[in-house]
Image 1 (cartoon, rainbow, N blue to C red):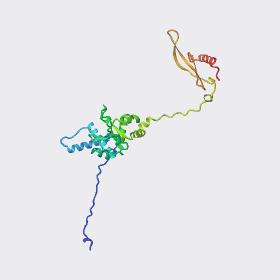
Image 2 (tube, one colour):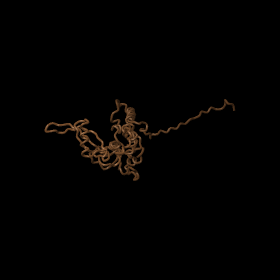
Image 3 (cartoon, rainbow, N blue to C red):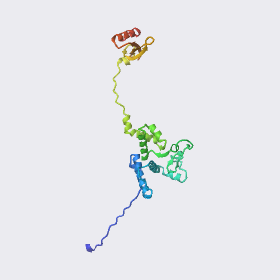
Image 4 (cartoon, one colour):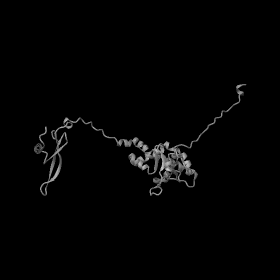
Length: 277
């Protein structure tokens, strides 16, 4: 058969695509506020495409940001507590081996998993009575810790954890907060201590036992005001004599810093304590 008589055959290429809906949006960004605004814009675009008569324009509102945060919270909870959420949605009890068993969890009207507890009749807010359950290993939890840490002006681990617990119940939250504050560069800079000068060895008179005031040091402190007579006051200076061995102190009063007053104070000290070396 000649080459020209060979029939033409076209090759067929088949492409198989798998669309995953389990993408964790929190893994794409490292700032909570930026993540919220981007998803809020996407949700607004979706809303405007479906309802063209009532389109939304203008800046992002606080309600949209809160709705975006609820979407992120539900997605983060499905990554770690999907089985428990399915059982609770059907009105069934969760397994006894689940770590959520002791929290008596429930799903609120927004579809968020919360702690049940026994604080239904308290006057606290709904978030404080029923905190949102999160896992410390999730990226959204790290973003929440970072956002709260910045909002509290780089507070310590205890303050940061107490502020988070007013709304969230984080499994392993204490370790997550400590790890975040340990890695924070701003906190690291503020906790740096200045280099201390290495002190030399103490002299022999300071470390060896000896009688009181056998080795004595002298200094001046003050001034102090004393009453001299009925009305007038007089300013004097304290002259402490300090024993090097026992740290005992002998006080004398001098009127000025001249050598005459010092010698007079020294004579009074020697007449009372003895002559030092």
